[in-house]
Each structure stands twice: as structure tokens, then as C-alpha cells.
Length: 183
Image (cartoon, rainbow, N blue to C red):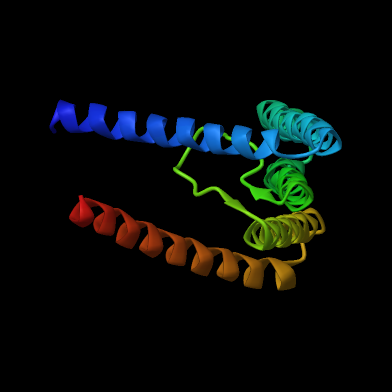
């Protein structure tokens, strides 16, 4: 492995993140004071929703640690509720993007993102809200099926999950291969 290439990739990702921050700051500077105030409040809501995810994780972890003293069905239900808790954050991010008309509305660590404004940002926000609703409904329904121990519901949900994971793995392999070839 070439250490220079790793440093170069990290620099490029950091540069892209800084560029995204500058684009967002420039866009916000052109907006009204009420829009900037809304952006500030939405960022606080996003942080609070990340706190909900952290609490759901800690509750699921605590239930898992206390496995001897809880109903065995409570453990998977708690983890499915944790998975469903991400949908709140997705919905808030989507609403934030739609109200700001800029996507992403906040710069988070992770993959490189393209900054878009206007109608494209509204559609990206709407897509994020939709994905959050689908995610929450799927994991919530899975938690309900496991909590009621309804095997007629668990079997198709497990099949859907397996198919989605297979598609995601194949997509990730193709994406990784494409990135390696293009570099």
C-alpha cells in the first residue's frame, strides 16, 4: 500500500469538505436574516435528533447487557427501534434542506457531497424525507413483527432485508471497483 496515495486521498476529502463548507457559508451569506435564523434552529434540531439516536443505542445496549433479566424478545425489538430512530434525523435533514433550498444543509464528516441549491435541493430534501419515512416504517414494522412474534410477518421482512443487503453489497463492490479503476 502506498502511504503517499492515502495522504493524498485524505487531503482531497478534507479539501472537498472545506469547499462544501465555503459554498454553504457563501449561500447563507446571501440569504435573509430569518433564513439564517431558521438554519441555526434546524441545526439544533438535527443535533437533538442525533441525541435521540444515541439514547436509542444506549437503551438497546443496556437491554442487551441485562439479557438475563429481560424478556428475550425485548433485545431485538430494542435494536430495531434503534435502527428506526435514524429516520427522525433523516426527516429533519430533508426538511432543513427544503426550507433552506440548499443540500446538504449542514456539512458532516463522511463521503464527499455535491452542494446543490434551488429545485434540486428541494427534491434532494424530499427524497431524504421519503427515505427516512421508508426506513422508519420498515424497522418499526420489523420491531412490531418480532415483538409480537408473528412469523408470518418476520419471514417476508427477513427476505426483503436479505435482498436489500445483497443489492447494497453488490453496489458497493461495483462502486469501489469503479473508483479504483478511475483513479
